[in-house]
Image (tube, rainbow, N blue to C red; front, top):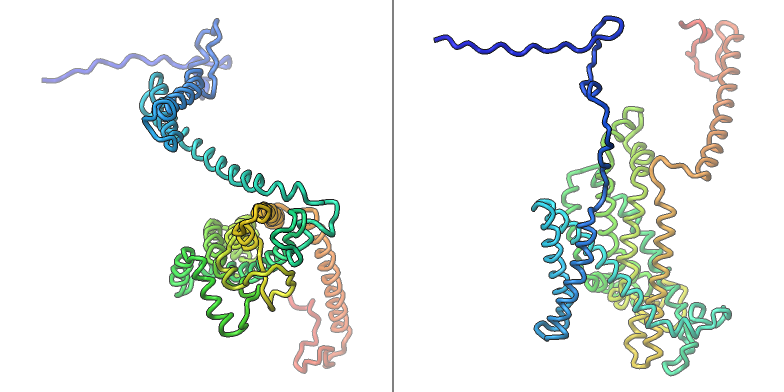
Length: 447
């Protein structure tokens, strides 16, 4: 039995143009009638339902948590914030689910959780900073800032006892110790950490996996162990006394793995085609590293330095074990005890006098300010993105180009003089270069 299929409907040809030729592109929407009513505009952002759901969930969850906690006593007061947050997530999910499907509800709840985590972290940081400045405000308020010879920053505690007024004494000795110790640690850590990260990514020798494993294991090294290691190997064997250089070595042991891992991560992000392009232009491996790889990861290396500095500048236990404690100024980090700002803050807070505790919190606040200044300087120095050129760099490149131009012109004149002397030299004469078998014909004869 033969099955006959119905013939397909005829396809109307596209309308021809005025010239009689069929156009190559036909847009069916052009044949639609003009719209008499403008369609509603597409609005981006949250809908009114979503905008009202967030404050409604906040108000309902906080109210219910307060009723369950302080009012009825069903939950302890310490659990009220956590209970309020959990009730907020549940209430927000229910309100969003009234107008959206399950996938949209889960997306909104996850977004709110991420925002809540960010707000929580920022709030905790601000609370810590605010508490430190609040407890040390008495010191900053009573310090004669206009008298630069006798204030909290320009004096030490050598002549100040624990019962002296809060306006006397300062932490200049701790500031000097901190800056000297972190500077020595950075001088050791930055080149060594960068070289190790380049070895792990550019050289990739047979020991690269072993070095990476050791570095990852050292990131979990307790600070007390680093201090004990330097105390046993440097102080007991060589210096025989507490000093700031030993504290710098202990800080270096803690900063080095952080620096190496951070630099290793940013070096992995360099695209391979950049290295291949440098090699294709005739550059050697280390020329490509110097002129291509390192400028590309400059901002990442600055971030690695910041992370290492933040990890080392606030250490107290290794400094206590290696640098000792003193109230006097010591400008020589290689001889005698030398205190740092975290250690000075610890010693002040341990004292029973209220004024000494206030000095401790003021010292911690001053440490926060110094760390902020160092971070801004590191970001300004190394935070320049790849490809950007500052006016100072443009001037340096122009001066280098002028020097190269003069050198090229001098070489050109020397070559012209040498060629002229070769052209006018008689047959059989020895060239000016002194080579016995040098050609006596003009270079222009060689085609």
